[in-house]
Image (tube, rainbow, N blue to C red; front, side, top):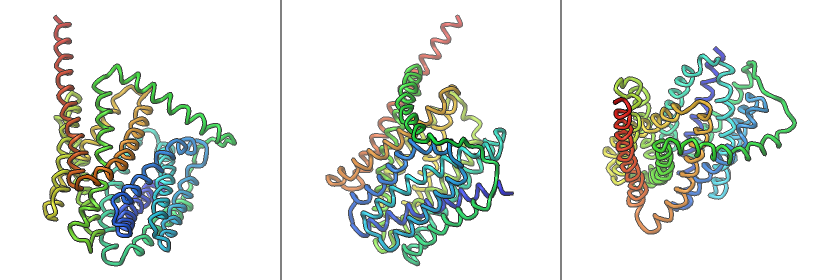
Length: 407
């Protein structure tokens, strides 16, 4: 029983994370009325995660992961509580950075502890449950933040948010399991080695992908997708304000919540598609990416809430399909380098987001929010279409070469 409680505590922490994503963005935009400040808040959280990713793996390997998670939850709760009396833009940006930074330690330690708790043979089954609980937390967190903030105000939402973190920490304190970790006084040395290994890993991954040009191109398109993703993360709170300035938080949460419902539906549907075999993964991934970006462009170009929510739901389906197929394709790489490929992929995603949050506000100073979304997601659509054509041509040549060899 305690094992499943452990998973539910992760879901509770996720619930808090998704709530503060909505609330802090609304608070800073309401206080400043500036898209640049909003983008800075989003970028700060991303940057915190990027920096922490260089250290969190070392910490998870060399310290007690249970204690790391407990302290991560306590610190996140304290940060949220401190934001209530000091909701200034500067403090919110600092808080967002710290939450992104600390959350990385929680998630890495949590993921690393799964095989220890549930066994190597139960990892796939456990990860499926985790994905389902995360999706549910996403929907409830986004919609809950919107509703509670709309009815009771952002301070009550932040109080509930902080409570979820503290409650998660208290329950983790009461749980006990055999946690295998290596005690060492050379943590600083381990961090140094980690920093050096990042450059080495990127080089090895690049050399590996050079032998698989279609996969190398797929990762490059993924980077552009992360860059484009900054546009809708910035655009949705602005769209919510356009729908109803007095109920921005409500519509902000509803849009993401309906999008999340579409994502949950996709996670149930994809495994049942029997025709989705190896030779169709790339094609389906690119088509999903194109439809996803088209969806973001369409609903961010509308101010009619029924149209926005309907298209957001469909967009969530294609968004989840694309990200799921991305992971599936990378999981088919050679085992000896698979972890590093995923690590570099996460780095590309974070860098793409960070760059997008810098570029998007600059573009918005010149054009409208709608046009900014068109430009960034249009770039991703163009890249996906080009990559799809190149992939189909490459596969056709491979089949012809294979046919010649058999003659």
